[in-house]
Amino acid sequence: MSQSVDTAREAAARSASEALVRPCRRAFAEFGGRALWNIAEAPEPTRTEVLAITRQLRTEGGMNARLLAEQVEQTARADL
Image 1 (cartoon, rainbow, N blue to C red):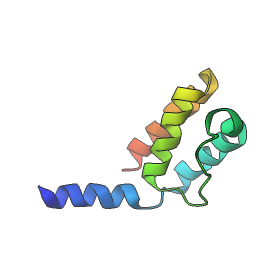
Image 2: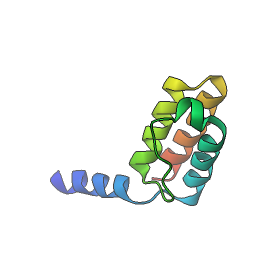
Image 3: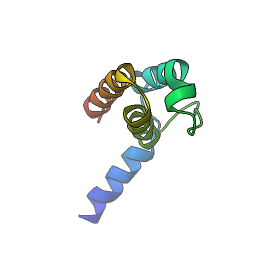
Image 4: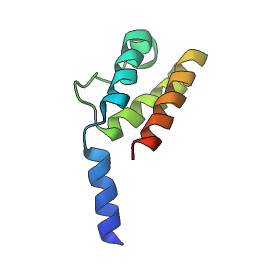
């Protein structure tokens, strides 16, 4: 069981795929000042950072930010 936990942690720490990086860059471009003010934009975000961005978009952003967060999360699930 510990091996599967380690594998999950390693997967979360790896850099996200380009399919996840693109919408994250879009999130910072469109919603950075309003919803992502407390998160630094990483050149190559990890999956963990991507999920932090989506959480912040849902909490601090408007409807368009929530829609982008949903798209990113769907892509993240498909990318596992």
